[in-house]
Picture (cartoon, rainbow, N blue to C red):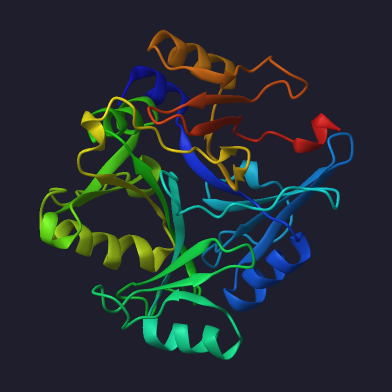
Length: 328
């Protein structure tokens, strides 16, 4: 972890998805998946609204207040006003970077049956395909929601569905893993590698250091590492950032992922981190050679920034305790 990260305590706080119909999307996450609408802000001057959804543990606080006052990973739904907005692109087409979000449950089969009974559409049911025991539901915009199994939640108080993952595809893990562990202070918890007979890809799972602080976690290359995520993080509603590497992309100089912010394939927008000081943290990133889409004083929204990761994904940088009302 860099000295800049140690000083500013970055915490992965959000994954942003654009939605076509905010009322429908919020209802899906609230009623079907049990998320709470923690905060909502409207910005008439820019004609968009933000809805922050989450699955906090009991005692972590629910609706109301400022989501930027606490370390809690949220799903940010962005609704751009107007009837003439372009269609949402949910990802998972050729060279798309964003893959899915995930929720952890006690029983994947029972959870899938519940959603099917409610009329929720599925990309993959639990026993379809070669990967048995996991499923992919579709939200109202067609975003994939993976349903994964957790362990040890009998007495944890964990919500029935708990936010568990955001998956992004990466071109070169030798660049992306150090970027997130060094510049943003995340911890690599597990990695899994699959040969050509099983898809020819690798998975890397990272978590906020603050969420595992003081823990001695298993060697990421061992089977115990993934088990630790399932039995220690998921039962406490602690999500991981899953980075997927399809083997061979690192040696293709022309390969580039769609980052979700280019028409006509806009859907996923960014992930975001809370820090103690946006200006100081951004200065430290610049010194490390990190590129920016927006520096803290660029544009009309002062005091927040967007840097770029090695694949060009936007990473929002937000002051801990920021009050969005200050932009109105």
